[in-house]
Length: 376
Image (cartoon, rainbow, N blue to C red; front, side, top):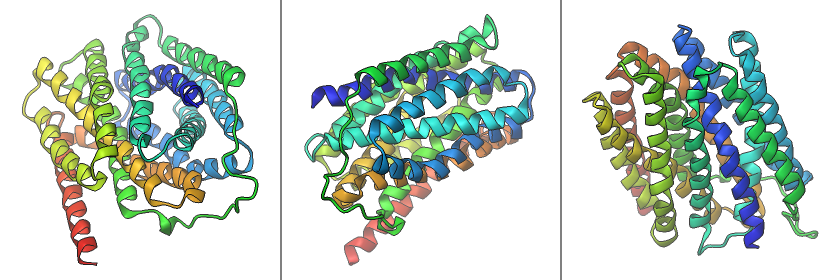
């Protein structure tokens, strides 16, 4: 059983190098090429639209076929999409490439999370989900540190990302042992979206919104406030490394303590942390700030997913996973446009004031809903 969980985790760790490399490099290239902020934001957003469309489809495909086929198909699509980014300067084509590549990404994430949830129980699910995101973050951090390869050739990072993901495709094709998600006699009933817990929906939206906006806003914020491309890559890496160091702790806490209360605490902490880049552009201080934020933001996803799997019926687990990622995709849609536009409004203050206020708004929503549940 341990091997069956470790194989997709190893794959997601290696594949994370590509995830951490392709999008930031695209944003940096567009910014250096003086592309309109709307183009930079909408190019990233179009990829997240495909997540919304294909996340619930991915769950149904896994139910109909099997995990291995959908996982390896996703890896192949993503490797192809990464390579196609060598044509990043053809903007209409770039939109199509982003959309197609994120279809593959959606299949990868849904399939990997189905494996983890299938082989986990109430005592270790939070830790296993966090381990998955931590290993993905390790790969992503390594990817951000390869942004410098843009100085050799603007196409080189995309070739590196594609080769890495194709290697993962071959690895999973050979090594991964498939399994039956449902028993032969289990009735495969469609899960209505209304059965999704509200807390799950909110936590996934919070994560999607911040994850997609920061990946655009942070490079733009850094470049427009006097940092060079290498320093921006370190800021991004610090953000990702924060997830590596802190996220596993949140996962263990979600197995031991009430997940709802943890989400309340995280909303408050993140609101306090995200206001600080508006107050200073000291590089070392920002490294610390983004390190902390990098640990808190993905914890919304892991804690919320753990909560979701505990709350829905087991027969709906795969579909709930797809819905959860779909809601994440909805949150990501507004992120890139909002992030780029807010940096445009004010290069130092715009995004961070908005992000902090949004955290405290979500905190109020979480608290209000908890009071309603207590009354009932």
